[in-house]
Length: 291
Image 1: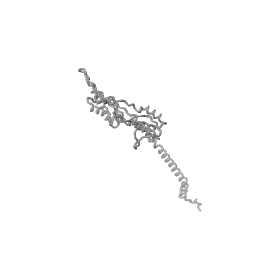
Image 2: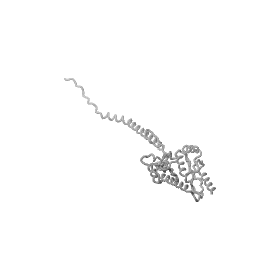
Image 3: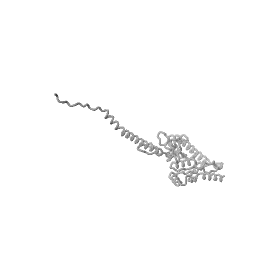
Image 4: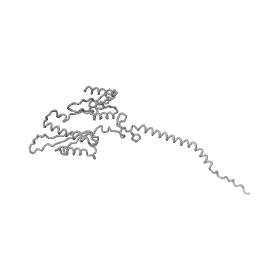
């Protein structure tokens, strides 16, 4: 079975028109992010499905590779390293304490429940418009803790990391208040004041679709705006503006030349007509001598 997957992978690589793979085995979401990011920098990238094999313990996960033109591979890798892509994938508690045997201790069951609750809350926060990613960390006091009399009991605390497109910076959205209320209402014993929210605006928030709905790519990158005599134009419409402007100037010059030619041709005729219409003054003979 593995040989079949490898053969299919090689066939896919052969159909990439000689592209060179620079990133291997990333999930679909991160692969899409890398493709869009490289497209915004003018580098054509292709997402290729990597071979995966299903096991009895876990379901197969779709993984992808990113391939670019060999002449741009160095530039692409330099950009990815500069922006920290692909991101390092850590191991969560659900993976560390995965149920492998028939029996598990109460401690493992508690850890799995708490990790599953945090994962569920993270998925709920990601459903909010403007939130790209979220990670919830819950801290529960030990169940076997016996504090001394008069000592306050440790509190349940939570920390939330939110990667957003700018929605957290909008004071009218009250996003931090909503997240705190969500956690305080979902976790037993967690108060509103014990929830810390850390927000981080994404550096790729400006990489969006164009207004007309076309997907950004190597031939339709983000619109670059230029200023000409105080007029803000997109770079794609600059040539059209120059054509219209210079055509208008040429037409204006031709119109001025036509007016000058008409004045030159008809002004002498008008002047002669004015001279003919003028009435000459009456001449009276001088008075003669009286006889």
